[in-house]
Length: 376
Ligand SMILES: [Zn+2]
Image 1 (cartoon, helix red, strand yellow):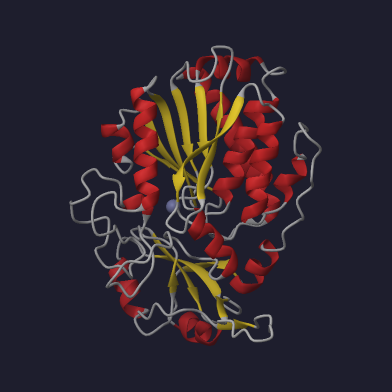
Image 2: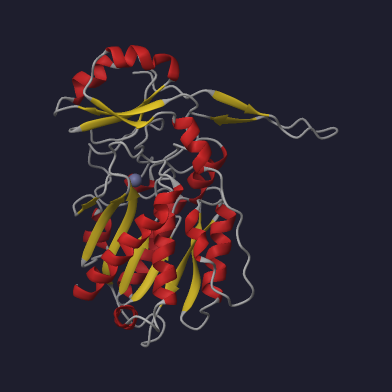
């Protein structure tokens, strides 16, 4: 299978007198059609038949189905193979274009809560930072912005810490990570909605008050900010971080495969820097993992971690350990989950989820979290 890049669009740089700017290459997926192919437990046979196609694979666990994007000029040949398949995107490039039409950030006055219209659209990274600063600024006595370190390109790994009547840092942690995989845009929006409601509904909802008075809440919306920015500037389907390594021709390490626990085991991660699941040269050797390990350990050494959730997309299911093993075994979280958000797949897209589904995705997770946190 040729995992080639999609059509390359040369973005014309601004010509400045005397400057020779380096052209930025942006990958579009114009004309690509995406499918969910039923594998019936035999992904090898499906992949074999696709060996000559320039497919873009979406999922790693292909036991039941293999989700792929096919270039427009290969669609007829692909359909002639007669796979049992459903369409995820008729034109992936068109759907990316629609998704990437961001609403402008609605500025708020000092100590005012950002508008709920934030959840009607996706946004640029800089606006996400603004959103968190504004949201925290509206609740200065019960929250703070936290900075746990820097990414490989020097971006702040920021988050929000929210507490209740016990005061700052007095209770076990509810701890969320978003956007470890850069292309999973819906995860940031969902954890933002959770943070928004934990703050705005304390006075009006007895369940929220009880949760806040029982736990300290720590939400890191972008544990892979460099990758996220890259999905907005260059390649919407980028997954890893943007760390360059000497001697490696490819960029990026899968932060989710770099945790320093049982890192040396084979299977489930790759030693090839060009692979989507590249695990790094050594356990925990990405700047992001170093910062995450130190911060997670500080929570463990504090009041402990009651519940950790690593938010991903897509598929709509919950994964229990083992899979997030460091948080479970080393950080000793009582519960450590991975939640895969919308879409489920068939007929409803993949990583590129229409903006109209942001709020429904967020609301269903908020209702689930309220129930969960009241019973655990
Ligand atoms: Zn993921």
